[in-house]
Length: 396
Image (cartoon, rainbow, N blue to C red; front, side):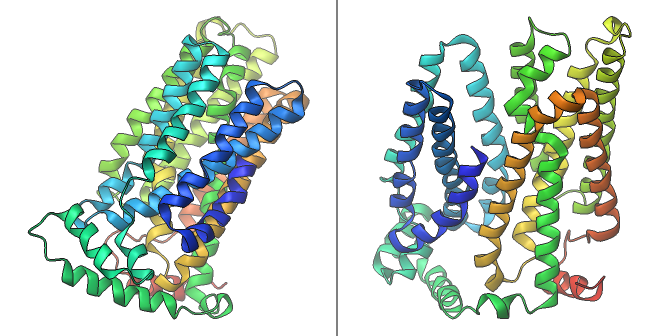
């Protein structure tokens, strides 16, 4: 699934440029329906894998394009809050599917999972196109009508329309890829962003939605594995709400350091539990330890590493670089997720759960040191100040 998302995360942006937001979301809603159909009627592993790839193709669009759309239609006063709800809504979706999978049949799960994206893509067609997209197509009157619809009849749309025209002109005259990345601060910002996405995925977070049933069953909770999985997803959703109040209150760097350090401690504890279990020690007195540690792990991820990574993506790049950076970052993010997803069962089968979790713990420790020595603090800094900080530090 992440492999399909990696492919579409770059292509859906190009599609949107030519046919608009609404048709892009509608078209990318088709692969997920076909994918669930292949899984529902699968007679071999190949149909399952192709189905998952197609589902990922739609997921890559759903994660990328609607976020851009929200950022374009929201007023300045609420834009940050709406964009910050991204992870909360993702984890609510994960919790819903886990809960549905526990109570519904496999057939019902696939039918509902296919129906909701189809409904979503269809309803999206009836939403207004974003004003920046309309301005880029020189449909100025329609853009004004949409702004009145979004902001109210008393809103003066002319100032925002003029601003959108200026931004569109700057985008239309954007520099080439080579010129954009000839700037040292931009190269360094891209390096930092890709590294943060690397540590985000290599922290092991992808194994929670994909393999938590396997993990809790191996830990000795075969009868409670599904319930504990739902509880972990719920904890992740609730903690992401707390993140809305922390990202702008505390420094990005301190949240990043604290988050990765806490995740290192959590996974070290999980690995040690599995090591004792593999060595035939009596772990009956510590049966709840993996669940408690995983709760601490997902909370730490949700209030630090996850939101800070996306905040950095939005605030450390020059405007002309974002058109190139967003697809690159999304592609790398999904490729890292694909690497973790495909290697986890292979690693646990060859070297065991304990050593596998020690590896993830070590990667989180590396992420902590990376944050300490390479990540600058950007809270309260202007774009010019951030560019200056990136320009004067270590070379790249």
